[in-house]
Length: 173
Image (cartoon, rainbow, N blue to C red):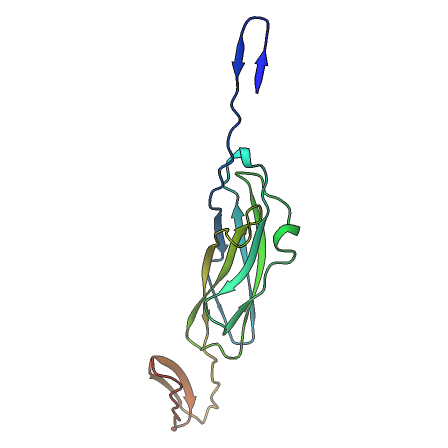
């Protein structure tokens, strides 16, 4: 662009748009829940593009490391979300369901993946952030006449009432 004045001529170069990886934070970073429960996380996405790029929209999807827990994508994810100006942030709520198949006493990862919607969907990189979700063992309530027995078998712990513990090994670790 040329700017003319009476005394001098100057040239102002337009700044090039440089897309950067967004910053993603998932809070809280640790939660506990039981099978059948839902827990909520908040993901904060910060647009790190330079100002020449202008605002960007992001695809934000819930994700987990195992099918034993299920993360819903935030409502209205993707291009229907408001655009985020460079240097600004937006928050997204993610619900995570712990299925009946989740292993008690195991920690899973739950979080989000983020993709800049201003880029080609198939070639744009995915970025992710995760929090830890611990599945609490069910507590066994024993009658006063029973003696509760704590046990640990193949890395799994629990309590049983009475004197007999039945063991079943589901898989080889």
